[in-house]
Length: 213
Image 1 (cartoon, helix red, strand yellow):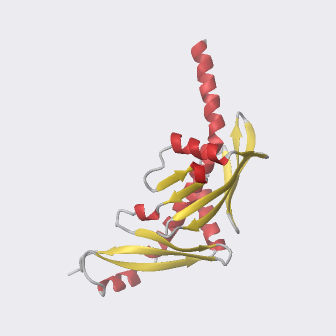
Image 2 (tube, one colour; image 1 turned 135 degrees about the vertical axis):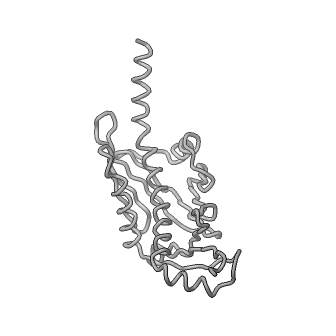
Image 3 (cartoon, rainbow, N blue to C red; image 1 turned 135 degrees about the horizontal axis):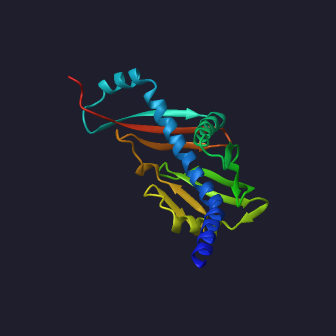
């Protein structure tokens, strides 16, 4: 009987934790999605990229492509990604809004009841071209949740990898783009993340292989 009760409590606790896990996981996924979008932009003009690579120095060199988008374009890309992720989920719905800040809003089920959640963050770039997310607030329903507590919980309970640095005391999350690269060695560096002036730019660094014979 005790084991059954403990099991029910464990399930209930997991359900209570879901909104926090979902909010931060989706936020990180959105940033990763933006990087993926940049990679797609690189591969789309494949002929031009190949032609440019031929005139560059041979091995151990890098070429770069600058990608620019506005808030509307980035929001559309991120929501397309989110809609794709939600296809097999009946318990959570969410969308991304980008204006003067980044806002993630959605609903999920907790103990059979619908609960709304909202996360506000201000994205900026640090001197290394990495994305710095300044978390302004997290809300579950109409109640504000303590930012430092939530960030500490996420940092201690979830593996975020080397690319993600969480600082609860500063209420910040740093996404170290310089620590992320594709199998082809492609890296992304932020150039501008000016939401006020609608200026969002990334630099994609592409390693050049040996010239084809």
